[in-house]
Image (cartoon, rainbow, N blue to C red; front, side, top):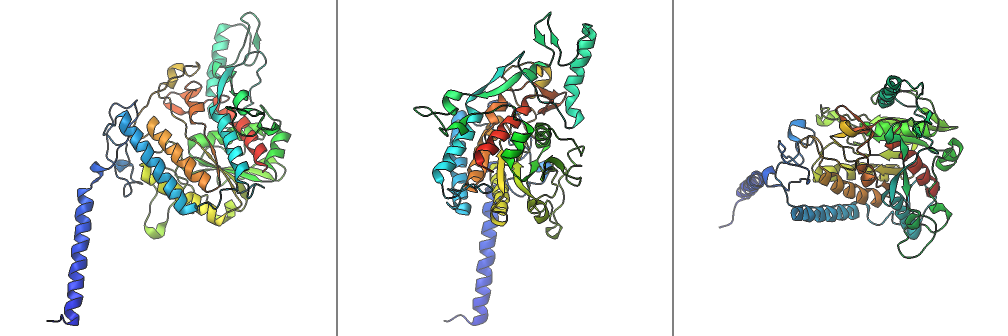
Length: 452
């Protein structure tokens, strides 16, 4: 017997309702407790829940998962995350930027793009922190005064000794330069692997461009960056990097505090070249919070608006970092893909440089003026573990390079430096001057070989 038209509509409605209920059933069955969990070797116990998407902006639901994983499980998880990142980058960006680096003169040259990326990667991963004494000249800090507290404490200790010497003097009786121990180390890439030349084991460029240059002058820096202004976006550590660039260009500080720089006038670096910083922990674009979708600011993150036409049409060099804000892998990946796709689609001539996230050193206070090469994990419910940092840095590298950007793989480089941190509860940021000043040399050499 044929079903009347009204009956067919009713049957279709019932079928859709049953299908919807089945979806809800399976979603409730596959609850967050069955989702992949992450852990580092340094974790012992943490508390909180795991909500991949719906709780991404809720600090109460955005804590680190608690299920421990073996090294074998972590290896499997790393491989899965790498595969997903590669698949997603291929789906979104394809091979459109395989021979081009946006914001430079490099186009239709896949070989040169690979050589340049290999060269930068070699500089950051094949090197050592070398201690220098008499001949060392440190960068004069011109940024936020709060990061000079370590020097102030060191000066007080000199006053107590009573030798009549000051910061930067040379103590002939002890044959040492009177600066903090953390300042005496310089990052030096291995010239046999990364320098000019060729042969087995050599990485990157073979000509004179492979020569890593230290402490460039302001004129050299201005020549390398060209007539392009620079915008730094990220968390509190990125604000310090803004200070490093400011000091490297020997410019004056015109804004104070990480929340006060976006709406203040930009720093002048060179004629026609400016520097500005925006605090956005998630690199959210094109707006930070969308009122039309009933979004509200999170109490656990800061998201200043930066991805707007008036900003990105002026600042053609972006230096980005997601920082130490914990996000599950799928949330981290989807948010970063959205940001990079926005920049890639609407601002195709912008140079994007993404800095790797550094591990924190929670015991930094007790050895902040030493050179011990060890670190642990603190407050895992609010900070990514070492395993998370490493995995999500690799995911970021895949996405950024697929979109034509440059990835600065400085994770291991700064994992060697638990010393020189601010300490007293702040073990993510560094004292100034200090290890972070190595970015002055690194950014200069990066701009130099990119032919910006």
